Picture 1 (cartoon, rainbow, N blue to C red):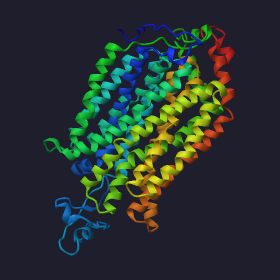
Picture 2 (cartoon, rainbow, N blue to C red):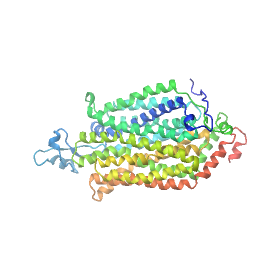
Picture 3 (cartoon, rainbow, N blue to C red):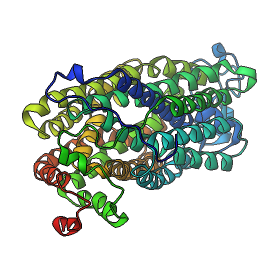
Picture 4 (cartoon, one colour):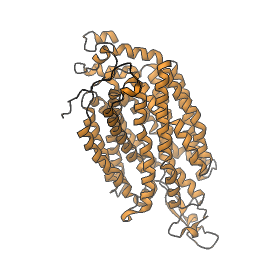
Length: 523
């Protein structure tokens, strides 16, 4: 199959029960896209889970005092390794019986870590997303997605061989470039395989990949590192994470068909606008840019950026936070890794998957009666209800800290699929892929860089006399549950203007874009 070749899919009949609209092959395609997104998230967050042993081997980030694990756990148990200098750390004893029970080593946190985890990845990820989005509106999306999948999987595999910080930076850039194509291509393909009545649920199922991959990163990152295969520790986590994507990319190329763009629209006039061959580049750019200057999408992007920043902050600081908390409670790194892996290997998977599916299902059912307002109501309510549980994660010690994560994911993650469904409904058909890429560009560029605020904010609280763990906890209170509350307030403002913009998008979709007078009509 050539890059520009498309095979048509027969659209389902209208006015039939939703379960009769679902085709077996559409479900298969959704499963392939789900697995792709799973690997996307697994590869992205593996660094956050393995950063401490990686930093201690290749030397980057902040240094601090921690339990010296060369001694047996019964010797170091209860040791208080809270010194602020390497000299004082070396003098700490356990019950006055043995020296050097603590050591001064890399913590797996600090500016260098936040830089490579967030901005270095996000900058290339977001800018490539825009470029890839334009390609997706012209060329075969499944071929481009398969290429991206195999490329970022190769970057993940190679990370297991690094020996210096600069090599990590280069491969992280490559990872961002490859992963940029995932959701823009997948969301566009899903919109053409599933009707409007099912689109929110389908996107919700697709977004299970976020939490499945994220949870697997904790399981693989912690337990494979502890297994220390061939005495290579964290390196095997990247080998295991990278290889499956190379195989799945080949499967996608062979078995997935490219759907006709705008295939699931209801009217002939809507389908006519899916033909883009005769539309100029200037018109396509105008098609994409115009909705983002309207109040609803502008507010949606701002709200999504605030909420997404909380997700990035917590995702890249969950393991460092519980590592620091474990140290303050006198636990060794192995004990902390086992504890975090035991809980976080299933909580995001179960809670997040339920959340995105329920969010999409509820908004799909309610939207039939109340229109697009229903999706916005789901966004606002879910974030307000989830914020106290996010705060509880930071307030309590384990195991209650982890238990609070369950409702946080179930309720708080409803927003993911719902916002994508709103974006798709507010833009022209032939610009959806690029519009999704622009939306992700905005919320990722803002949210992905917010973790850089954690180190200076933590330092500000340290200067006020807070302990190391208390200062990190205070910074996360502001940037984790605080963003849930801020995002919900901005989503609420979006509800007041969304109806007008939806009507404009519907009128636009009914126009013939190949008409020479088209530009005059939309001006």
